[in-house]
Length: 280
Image (cartoon, rainbow, N blue to C red; front, side, top):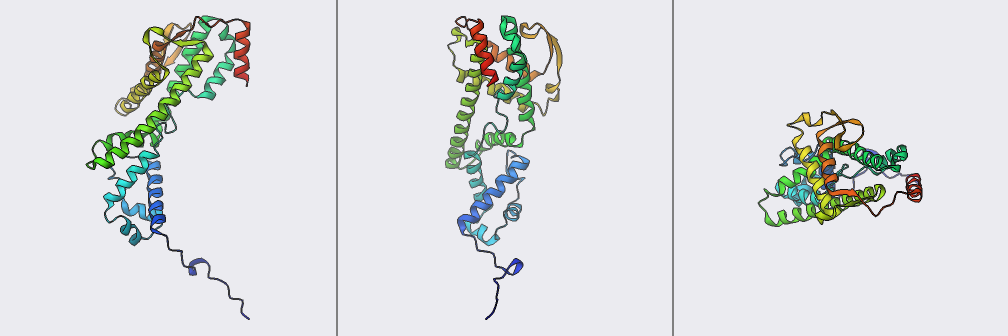
């Protein structure tokens, strides 16, 4: 009787991957590489051989699946587009926890119209700067922006339509997130959309998203956009604060859409409701 053991370590033969498994490993490896470095307007910075090594798959199996690297890059663009998070870690929403924390710290400001206005402006100032800095530093955000530029230059019209469809879905999801975030802010501070605009929170979200992207795209050539300037009484506030250009742009946009809701009565019951909401 023998105690023969199955081969282990380097003596064990690695299971041969199916073509589907090889393809998925390649796409996953390329996605991870793009996630680390960001996507440029072309894919020239991404080496096909580096992706194969990163995926740990057999070259023969890869070339059987994709005889030409351009075929692989087409599939990679499809996957990037359909998994593209427009938010990319920094989506133009108000940071919900940051809003609650600051509002809770300044709960006394809810008692007066000036206090509520000052609090709203401060929430917008801090939130815009935080989002701008996060988006500016995000490789995932650069990838998302590069995808917009890349798909327009694709010669394959079917691939172009597929990438556009994925990006459009990501855009709708992002817009809905931003709209819901500002709708909650308006409810908290007793604000409404200005009736004369006949606008929606979705339209406000679109304006905010476009404003922030403009700053993020301009920032590499204009680093002075991140500089802050002390401005007393900005937007009718009682104090002074340091303002960046993105914060000015976002705050001006929001205040052009929103105004105090005359139907909201700031009595003790309302104040108690706000305290309860912030304390939950």
